[in-house]
Length: 207
Image (cartoon, rainbow, N blue to C red; front, side, top):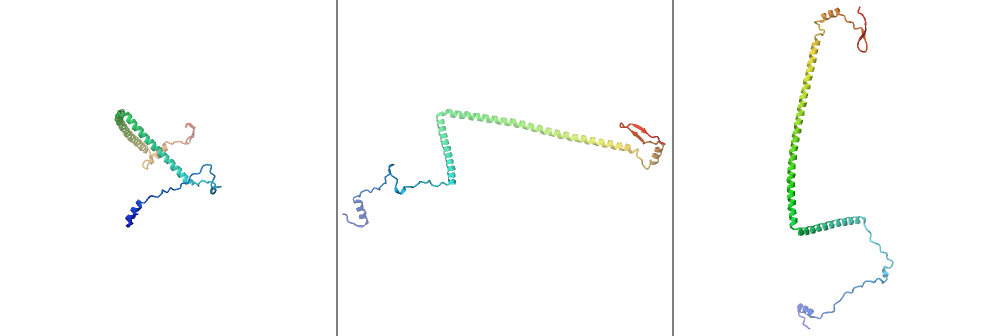
């Protein structure tokens, strides 16, 4: 026995004391297939838990989305592995092919630029030609309008001259007596008939 002096001696005494037996927790064994049903569970019918349709739709959509994401990730990882393996296997051939593709790309880009420049020049020539044709048509329209206007003025001048010529035979207060005497000296008979062709077929005699 150790003398009990303060708390330190008590702890030392506990550490040096003989250990007790290890306690093992009792584990319930599983039933075998031949064991009968427990009395508390006799007549019980297992009913599956209720399923919420909305929750089922959401879960189905999320599961579908999860499958798509995982499939995409697997394909991405697989592509990376295949690419890395291909690069390791090909080595210099891949680099040479990359240089060739880059050279072909530069050549194609240069050809594309030259073709764009050629098409641009053709477009500029076509636009200039269309502009010149439009200006020519506009000029022709102006000249035609001027010719029509001049022709109209000539016709009007001709009409004016004709009216002036006809005005010489108008009866005016100055030549009224003269015209009366001429009418009396030269009587005209307007009492006649004409056929469909405009020929005089019958006319009365002046008295």
